Amino acid sequence: LGLQPFPREAEGGIREDGTTRSSCLYTVPGPTMVVFKFSNYGDSMETRLLGARIRADLRPLLDGDEKVMLDFSGIDTVTNTFADECIAKLLLEMPLDALKAKTTFTGLTPMTEISILTALKRRQMQILHNR
Image (cartoon, rainbow, N blue to C red; front, side, top):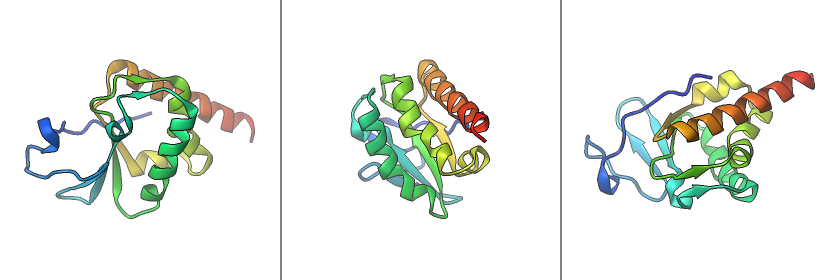
């Protein structure tokens, strides 16, 4: 599905280029990009309820002109149900190609990446089956 890596943030929320973050968002210099930090919601992303809450916060950013970096740095756990509710359900509102064009990922552990990819694949198959 083409998850795109991005350079990691240095300790303390300060990037190598000197930019910092505020709340869960900060802007990266160069091509306009907003960083959405999942760690501001905790270190475990486990429930559908949390996934729905974060998706509600994330969704308006995807309507903007800027690309959105989904930063999972510091996240220990991402369940398939959270990944479905937070990320994969975005496919109900936008095509996969549009989601890929508007987002990039950073800070994924191998297990987090598997959870997100599994949720996206399942949701995409469901959408295609229901057409």
